Length: 187
Ligand SMILES: [Cu+2]
Image (tube, rainbow, N blue to C red; front, side, top):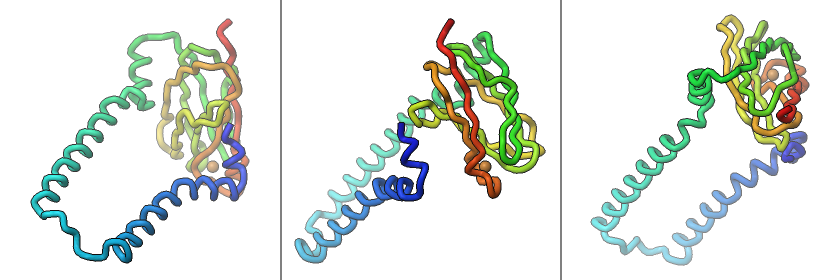
């Protein structure tokens, strides 16, 4: 769905601006406040400020811990270990990456059946990223030649065509290093 944004330099630049412009606006606004609106020294007492700083620090630490603990089960490695432990019926797929294409033992997958991707590179550093049909990246792996095959287990929940892309720059045809997986609905 968002693919069009990433297929040309203008789109990528626009996405970058969406992230940067709010910071620029806040930055300029603060300069404006201190330069014209309220140039005198702050009248907040130092003691009040330090209380606020402690409260802020506590909030940041609490949010940091909460987000990490709540999201840990969504980490690909943790999710992989959980599926492996539950002894589900896993479909094994071997993937070999080579400049600038993938060899994939089977591109036909099924909704609801866990897939173990065992992926390696035979020449240089490559990536193996799988995208949902709506453009979201589901996971990515970095493949280093000479390192053992690495594997990840993913269970697809929706049928469709899932794009595969290399996300590690690997030479002149890196952008063309793409493939696709077909996920079929439950029979
Ligand atoms: Cu590449």
